[in-house]
Image 1 (cartoon, one colour):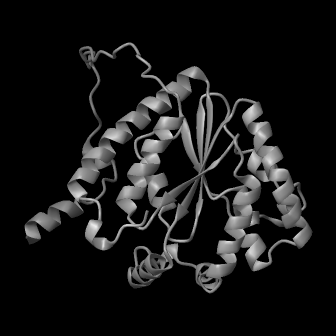
Image 2 (cartoon, one colour):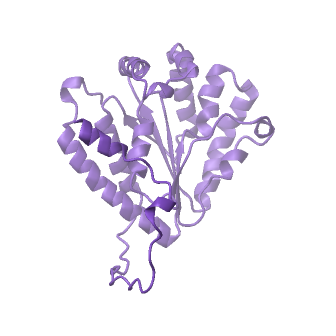
Length: 271
């Protein structure tokens, strides 16, 4: 259900609950590492629907050696000559790893299809092969969770304008995004067709309402924690013993090294 601006989730409650959920994500990560599980989480959705923000909050406190984000660029000429799923396979997790796909093989069912970057036969073949491919992953023991971030056209328009006006976030808006904006209906039809073929019991789509970013992040993380049967893995507590004596070691003089100038101190003096 969409929420208007008047019902925007309270910031203080959001921040406290987000921290609680992130603490649980750390427990989930440790369970994956110790148990040798393999977890794949796919994030798809409309441009500016908030999936990037959700990925950032999920990964914020996770060890990058265990949990990594995969956001692939456009395929190279060599990759275009491969089986479509081939370049994604090499990024799948090994035992004890989590992979968060910031867009995935579903590019073929969305932007490639709508923008004409693949042929009708390639598109048809994807819709046929994708459920088979995902069933193979699940059958091999990979936990596959798929999220579709939905956003209203009015909210997407507001976010696009905000990005245009913010030099720190303008990189988030590309000419391709603006072209896709013109094809809202075509993308809607492509998403509906994609769901018909790939919303399967082994790896169903989970739709996240994204008009309120705070609600979307909390809802997504809470759901992810609910579908992964993690437990709190108890590790032996670490103890910080006394520092060993320096014995006869002496640090070299400071003037032998190139120190970064104390720019922060100039701000204090200037204030």
